Amino acid sequence: MHMKRIVLVAIIAMQTVVASSQSREVIKVASFKGIQVTGITVSNKGRIFANFPRWRMGVPFSVVEVMKDGSYKPYPNVGLNRWEVGPPADSSFIGVQSVVANGDMLYILDTANPLFKGIITQPRLFVFDLKSDKLVKTYNFPSSAVHSTSYVNDLRIDNKRNLIYFTDSGEPGIIILDTKKGLFTRVLDNHPFTKAEVNFLTFNGARMPFTVHSDGIELNARNDILYFHALSGYTLYGIEISTLLDPRKLEKAKPFMMKTAAPDGMIMDEKGNLYYGDLENNKIEYITPDRKQIRTLLEGEAVKWADTFSIHSGYLYYTNSRINEAKGDISSMEFTINKVKLP
Image 1 (cartoon, rainbow, N blue to C red):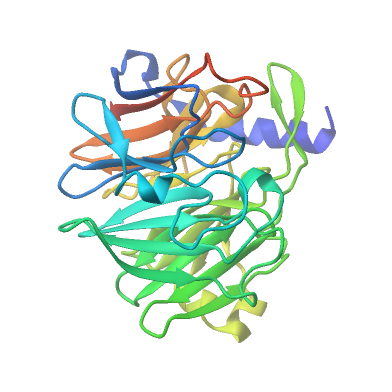
Image 2 (cartoon, rainbow, N blue to C red):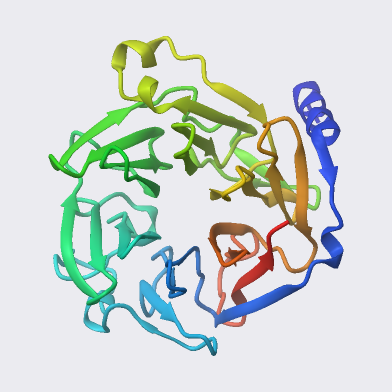
């Protein structure tokens, strides 16, 4: 192990305060056999939506709504979920990576990059009205906002400014959409803040080649700070929105920085706790509101690559995407949505 990594692990260990995570009850919300789930979101009214990226052939649907009994159905209908890898189709989901409910709207992010072979058409953001389950808006990412190997990964919505922030994990960068003007801006393109820090992760002592750039993202709307993190990395960044939107300030930005585990998605609760997965150690951790302590919420068999999170009625929902395990034939593997009470 390199000295830099030893020091980093030591820092993380000193910062981490382990809570009584083993005693927390984990409730299984839904299970998908042989279908790898990544995204999860729960609306204000408790409707649950999940997505399944086209990382391999034979994915039967891209987005589902999960019922209270754990059953599920394609959302909004079978037709939009029917596409199979081949020529692009404007009227179908191609490669959905993220679903986010905000108010009465559901935002569905389509990477247009199936099988990680490059984008085959413009990535798109679909906006559905949850009161009618009708498509009300589609935003197409222009070539100025993405690269040919971009993988637009996750998003957060800034209701105060009518902006949406996206991470690009295929080509490092942050993308900003002005929803009023329909204009896209790309910032921190191929920047150290958005680039992967390592090209592998470690599971049970074995290295797994893995280079994923800016991935997890969360907006602290109260303090106007955007947090983001490369998946293949150990540094959390936080930049004030006023700095992010001003090219002159951004060029000289000195963001908040904190060493953490390597995570996937992130989410913040109303108290200001910032949750994320420690992928290499089967944990869910959170940074306290003062941004000085890291605590463990949950660890063990109930956590298998905690991918994406949502919060509703005092519970943290999360998906187990099992990316480090899902190699070759996954038909017998179980991928779950679970929930656990917030601290």
